[in-house]
Amino acid sequence: MHRQTMQQSRFTRTYTVSDMDLNHYGTMHGGRLLTLCDETAYCAAKKLTHHICLTRAVHRAQFQRAIHQGEEITLSAIVGLTGKTSL
Image (cartoon, rainbow, N blue to C red; front, side):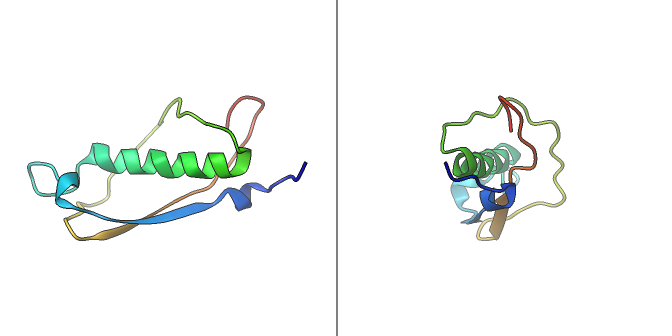
């Protein structure tokens, strides 16, 4: 079996914010951003394990600024720690 390093789990994606992602203030809905973060983390975990992985918890999310329609965002995830049953 070929072992991978956690660095090899890195997954990066770019996303352009569309009108479907906006809240009533005209900025990206925080829940939509968290969904994209979760999907990106899943891709990194799957890349490392080659198995289906689930999110058990998100401990903290802090938004720094509003994101507007047409803006391009880059999301990147890497597996930082591994255990017997969790990443």
